Length: 133
Image (cartoon, rainbow, N blue to C red; front, side, top):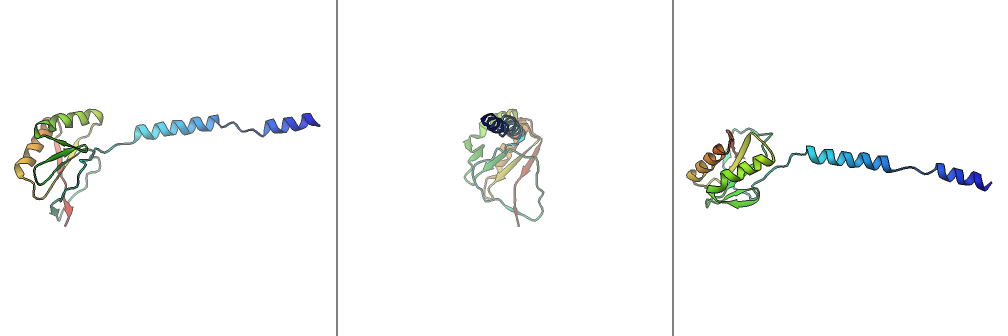
């Protein structure tokens, strides 16, 4: 009678290894396929616009504050280094559009210099963010 009881206990064990393998593989899949957005890192007062379109595949944001500070990937950047930082971000995650979030009181000259640096980095599509208005 003791032998019969041992066999029943052995059959009741469920091997969790295959399930853990599948969960681990799914985790790796989702990490690899996730697109990460490189946000500017600050909030700006965007100008209002009546007509605007939403960019779906943009993942690099450049913010320009009203005092002329430029922020990219949650860090302040000098105007001379914007192109190099964009190229670095493009190497990490390629994209074909960059969004500029310029404050409504930002100097036009700074915005144009940032746009030139982005174009020199190899991006032809540049969008300017605006608030609904």
